[in-house]
Image 1 (spheres, rainbow, N blue to C red):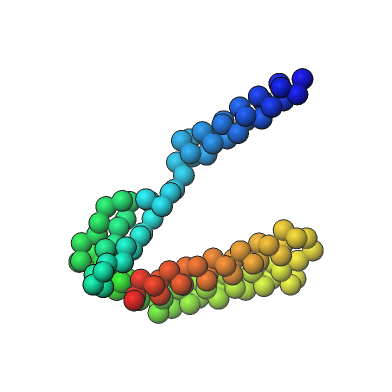
Image 2 (spheres, helix red, strand yellow):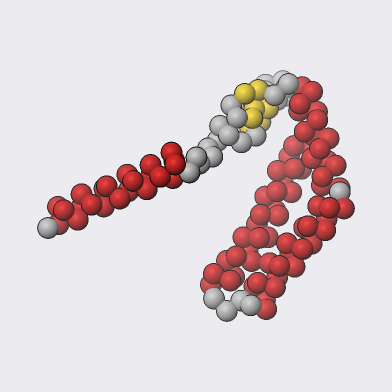
Length: 120
């Protein structure tokens, strides 16, 4: 009986890995923007595993700077912070409410930090 349960757990784990990886097309480190530091300050930017040209890098930097300074981002950022506060302070009755508010704030932090790192 114990052996059957163990086999079933193994099958479930393998099925879950298959579904997550192959069916839902998960994103891995090769799918995101990656910057590899060069020895002489000449960084190489990669996206989806392919190096970006200097023109593409320059364009992305300009877009990041423009987006961070845009009225649209400032308004969206304020709305996300408002919703996070509302979720944690006003409706925060469960641990999930508090966690969701923290995650919204974390999202903003990650997004802004990534954009700022692109400008360096």
